[in-house]
Image (tube, rainbow, N blue to C red; front, side, top):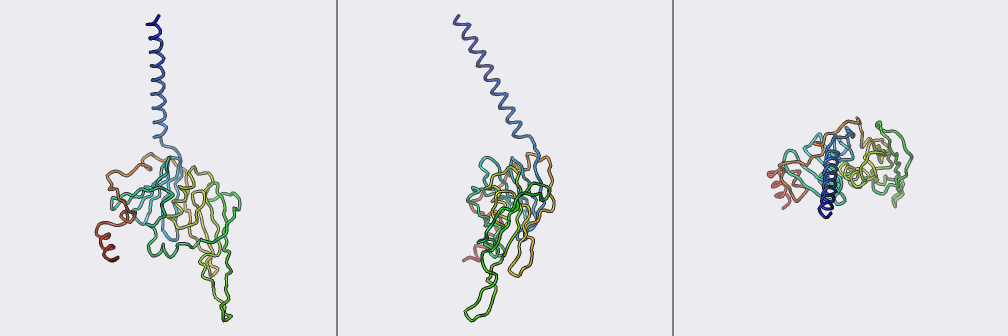
Length: 254
């Protein structure tokens, strides 16, 4: 009787182990299997042209004009920033990354352009072939201020208003979308950015972000693979500069 019970227990354990192995193999295959995502060709006023890959398995931003790549993946959605030329990689929490790499002279000039604007949701629509939220933003400052001597002048606000579209159905968390927006130097919103047009202090209408192409396609797992053979660095600036240029920059800073 005792031997029979042991045999029954052994069979139950063996079946349970086989089930666990099968589930693990199924989950691993599902995790590595390619799935449909979005490929967006975008152009920004400050940062130039980029290709954006988006799916539930990650976000990747490839700069057309530089060798920078930004990679984010679940579950943590940490920023993995690497440079295909310098072979350097830098990693940081999404909430802590402020996109300083993209600043430079032009970036510093653009920082804060959209600060102080009121915003309101203006409904859901189609933009770039996908479901999108439309956001309207407006300056709360007067266009013209009166000097003490009675003369008038523009108040210096770079942006009077803007119309902003972000994707409504792309399965990425807000903090991951914010990384893309910080890199592009545009307002933070919950959703992958699609279009942004603003009116400047002179009343001119300017495109800041354009999505020139948006299509769905099966994305191979390699799109979101970590870079191999890269040197891990502690500073974001080390990703942008090779050793010679880094030394020159440090010498200029003395």
